[in-house]
Image 1 (tube, one colour):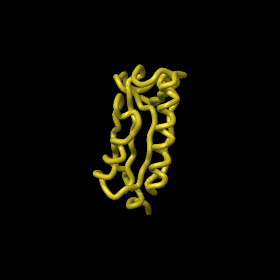
Image 2 (tube, rainbow, N blue to C red; image 1 turned 60 degrees about the horizontal axis):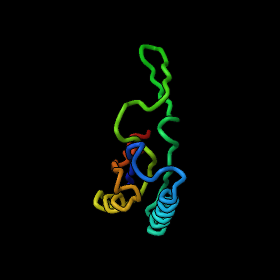
Image 3 (tube, rainbow, N blue to C red; image 1 turned 135 degrees about the horizontal axis):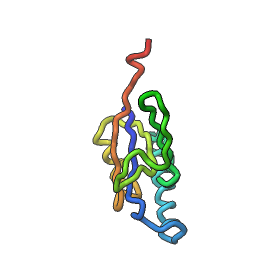
Image 4 (spheres, rainbow, N blue to C red; image 1 turned 90 degrees about the vertical axis):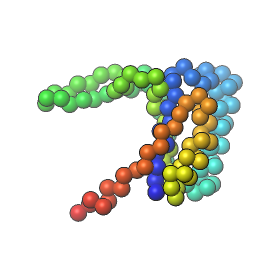
Length: 120
């Protein structure tokens, strides 16, 4: 079963950009990537640019509206994701609790919907 781990944190949480703490945490992220790959559960994953680079597109009543920023104002923003292939939710939780920013962020786990059952 594939699960997406959605990595979120407050914009001001965690190490400051360019700090030694940020450099140390980057090493933890690379080690986490390697651990997922060595375990054979890694499908994909990426970090996202900061939330102030987001653009939201809506089509309402036949018109397109493009706005700067995320869709919703929240205290935590999506910073990246992983897709992993594991046996069950318990296994996904065990990988989520090892994410390097778990001490100041959170991980939402979502099962990936298999649409192939609906393909012609």
